[in-house]
Image (cartoon, rainbow over all chains, first blue to last red):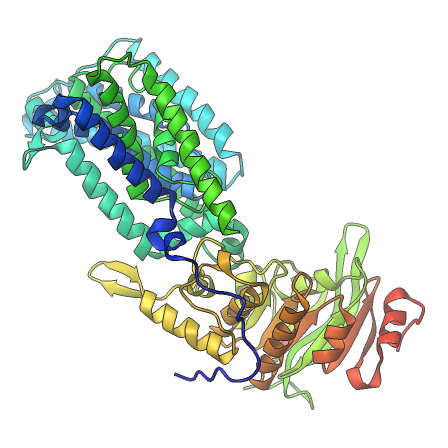
Length: 344
Length: 255
């Protein structure tokens, strides 16, 4: 080591933060994780059937759909953007996949095992990727604001959903439709498959964010986009990639919900964009950019679902859910604000 | 190595008749200058004198309207900042171009991250980058921890991070845009020390500054721009703050 720290030069005015202001403790995700555990304990004490296997399996399945999209949404939020179109992308992909499955079942594809459902799912995800690509191109190359662009995409995708379905729900069909249900609504190792998908995707996202160049650039885009540009980071490509991934996560969740419901209604996931963004934000993603992660997205979504489920088990009016979720959003951000102000 | 014609074999940067027009406005006219290896050149001038335009031309932000840029004896035409960087010109921007939410090492290696191949994937080489960043901070004699977030750093440490970034590629010329404008007196001394260390390693530094004491403390030569023209280019020990002030304001036409 060629280090010789001699001479009068030193920066002795910079100490180390206290342990509770450092590392994992110093994040909103940690606070919310603690809140999540406390609320879960409270709910399980007062609602006896909360801990029943059936209820736990149901709850963990219900929140997986939101959480999968919250993963994608968190990526966008880390770069300092926002994606409002996720709910309608879910619906459009869900109805298209179901309709294509039905259509392919009447063609020669029906003769090849699994060709119909595979192609329908691939096409559905292709539509999602296209929506994300359009968002990403407009936002990065033309520099439109993410809010306005994805608001437009929200309307376009929802409109397309109604145009192609004329408002009628679409049920998946075809020779291998049972396989489709098994893959979207089945169980693996006793756990609902949506939960398995969620955990696998969250793990991949965690590794990619922390240990790949792409992941680092996602954070730097939210931290200082100009610095990224000046140091040669391919800013536009990274930005497009997060919108495409976000739309893909929405499309994937839409397909899973189709399997769960056994049909894709045209009003599927209406208003989910706010729930999804709320989950990301509660989990610690900062709308100003630069902060967030998969653990936060999962915990944020789980917290919302536990509150909803708890209210239902108490026999309370479930319309209170939104009031509670709103309060938690504000509380989570408030605690983080007080903590960071203290640190300065 | 250097194979420029004539006596200026150590010239790193040569500008010949560089002019820049923005529509009807001539921001720079007919600038000739030479920077040699190990030179610390102060570039001074009032707001609107053309300092930033000149820096941006050298750094590849835009093309000159007329004139030539030679670097290491080769003529270059930079289309992007990356082109200038690839031949050995690094810029420390006024706002330092640092990302607060990632570590010092991550900022040093921004856009040039080291990776290790594991099967079909490439993962960041955190250990390698931290070690190299620590080495660079050591060379700059800066007490900066590679793993600390830039958010929690002092102005002097931030400068060290921005300067360490330019040392990754063994740059031959470093342009520093107002590095001492927004930091405390104590930290200014630290930054000036950093500049001296760069010079000792044979790096040419061009210091763009408003602060007369800094320029006279660290530079060998001072260049004064006024209204897009070069009004002076002389060794610092043959000039004085009074003379430079007069050149900047126009009280003195040239020196």
